[in-house]
Image (spheres, rainbow, N blue to C red):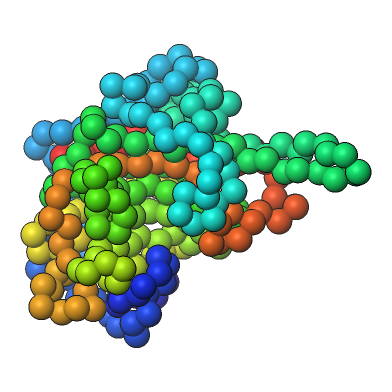
Amino acid sequence: MPVRIGRSTLRGPPGGSPQLITLTALLVMALSTACGGVPIFSPPPEYTFVEDFDGPAGTGPDESKWTFDVGGGGWGNGELQTYTRSRANSFLDGRGHLVIRATRTTLPRPGNAEEIVYHSARLKTVDRFAQRYGHWEARMKIESRPGLWPAWWMLGDNYPVVGWPRSGEVDMVEDYGFSAVESSVHTSRDVPSITSYSGGTANDSTFHTFRMDWSPEGVAFARDDVPYAGVSWAPEDPNVPIDPPQPMFMLLNLAVGGTIGAPPPEVAFPVDLVVDYVKVW
C-alpha cells in the first residue's frame, strides 16, 4: 500500500503528493530485531489499560472501561447506520471476544417501497481512559466487505469541548472494504485545513495483532510485529501532521456506508468486527 502525506481541507486521502517516510530512529526506539531481520517488540513493563473481553456469552462490554455513542445522523461522513447499546449490536461471545455486529433490516413501506435500516455499535473510552505516548495493541478479526467501515482509532480527550478536527485523530487501523487496512494521523494547524498521513497493508479478514507506538519522535504502525507504516514528526514542515498535544481516548466501531459507499445488495449481513483484546502501556 502507498504511504500518503500532505494537507487537505476534507477528511480522507490528503492532497499532497505521495512520498516515502523514513522511520530510522523511531523504529530503532520502538522495535528490537530478531534473527532473520523480522522485528519483534519488547515485553511491556506495565499495562495502563487491559481489556480481554472475558465474560458470559451475550453480556455487554465492561462499562467501567467503555461507553457508547448512540444514534444516527451520518456521524460526519454520511454514514447509514444507527448506533445502539443493544446486545444485538455489541456483545461478548463467551470465548474471550467482543463482537461488534452490523445488521441490515428491510422494512416494508406503502406502494411496494422498502426502507433499508442499518444498526451497529460504537464503543469509546472517553472519560474512562486516555493516554499520550506509549504503545497500543489489539488482536482482532476485521472482515473486509464493500460498504463496511470497521475501525480502532483515537480522538483527543478535548474532543467533547473543541470537536473535530481540533481534537486530532489517530487511526490505529481501519478497513474501507477493499481487502486492505489503513493507519492514519489527522491533525489541524489551522481549521479547516487538515494535515494527514496514512499508510497501509493487505487484509485477509483473519485474526491479526495490530500495534501502534507513539513517542515524541513520531508514530509507527505494525501488524503481527512487522511494521508497515509510520511518520516522524516535523514541526516546521506544514505537510506533516503535528504531534497531537493531548492524551487521546480510544474508539471501536463498525460503520456502514458514508464516504466509502453503501453496501451492495450482495453483501451478506450480519457483518462482525471481532476483538480478542486491547492493551495499552
